[in-house]
Amino acid sequence: MARQGRDQPKTNAVRILEHLGIAHRLVAYEVDEDDLSATAAAAKIGLPAERVFKTLALRGASGGVFFACVPGDAEIDLKKAARVAGEKSVELLSLKDLTPTTGYLRGGCSPLGAKRKFPVYVDETAQLFEEISVSAGLRGLQVLLAPDDLVRAASEQPGGVARASYADLV
Picture (cartoon, rainbow, N blue to C red):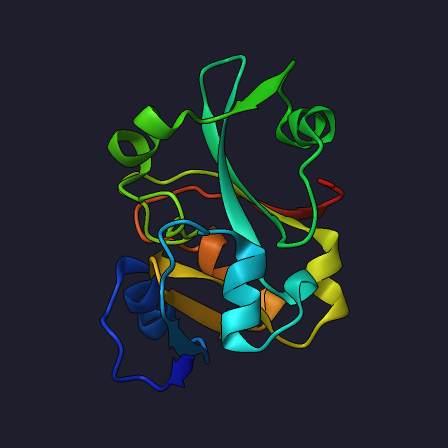
């Protein structure tokens, strides 16, 4: 069951959106530790999975880390992601490295407000919708906003040089 409103916990992602004056909505839902998938989150908040974008942390051959936001019902194409990021190859960041590197837990990884600033790539299919959903930085909390606003927020994260571009990642 989803709960909407702005009385949800403030995360770094939400603080960034508020600082930039970006319109957004928060939706909380019950977390099932056995299914942290974007498709499960989509069902719980009542959105089609293609509008709930999962945030994947990847590491390139150069050692650089970046985020890729892809539709919840899609799989990332690592070769395409490498090309978009200008890397020879990429791999998903291991679960043991996810929290120390990003500050986020699996199932609650947001493209905004990580412990360090990372480039963010949003799949071009986000542009098909007026509003998409990404993790707000906590398991069980999604932020809904316009795709262009996500790109703007990712590009303007304080202290960071995050790149945001639309690319075919799936």
